Length: 403
Ligand SMILES: Cc1cc2nc3c(=O)[nH]c(=O)nc-3n(C[C@H](O)[C@H](O)[C@H](O)COP(=O)(O)O)c2cc1C
Image: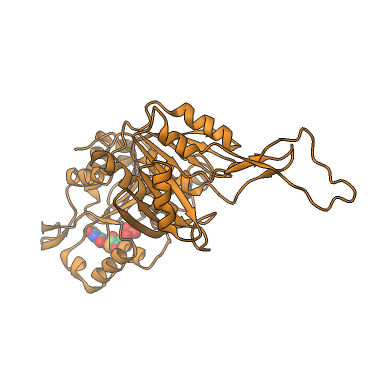
């Protein structure tokens, strides 16, 4: 079984007989190296005590949404952000119905709505409950709404109530293996990834600069996805207003020249370099020592610009070239044609093309739609959240290492 070392797994437990197996599941996950936290519905506590799960996970068990102590420490949003995987086992018919209705009326349903972690459900219920048209309609609705949601089981066989049929929860060892398989695309373990993100600022004088609208969100989402995939990630960030993703080393820079210097200094044993930064092509040729003052009668001003170093081309043509170099092409027209030209001109392996002229995706937005352009391929993805796009891109790019 692939190790779950450092993987953060939130185990959700709902009110069903199979809750007794959740204790064994938590044990299996911890044994595989995962950091496990447990969230229980009120009904689940009727079947198994939080104390047992606290002892097995080594962490306090969370069960109330409105917990003042928890809100000061790890509230529901923090818990949602913490997880790499939210696995609900057992998932009751009632819980599935609440998810299908989009409810957030307890801690577990709220976490399901709030998290960007991978999601998995292990249904467990009497076979007639599972086969009931209402349950099946709820399952179908969830499958359509959350195509990435993994369904672990249910299994068929003898049930606690004596009936025989589908509805049994999978055994803990099998569930732990399936949890590990959720990370199997995480083939970046042991790899070094460098990502540039955000805009650059090109100073005109001590108070003014030239810049662009890049928010850095795509690069930060990629850094988070690469770290989640096990890579050692260095994120070279221009001036942005974003928190550093977990397990990511961040270097802050301001100008294109600083970003170039920081990027080149990283080269050596880099496996994957992804340039998402919107680097200024030009900078003012001189930097005024003092703030430029408007002169009486002055009707205009001319700035002379000189070219900045091309970071992605420098990296791709460097002696210590990373194994794979990926450029982003933010275009407003002729997306694929410009992406192909960029692929050749900059000697990169991949170009991620996105249309920034659209209001719903691109600069500053939380969503994106991209085409991953390779030498002989064009793979579209989205529209989807930048986190989903980032995970998809990391999956695609890491697969190329193994090809
Ligand atoms: C003894 C007993 C066993 C139950 N077993 C199950 C079960 O295996 N699966 C299920 O979906 N519901 C089962 N239920 C019903 C759920 O506990 C009930 O629907 C509850 O509202 C679920 O709440 P939750 O989803 O918030 O945990 C059982 C109820 C009782 C009293």
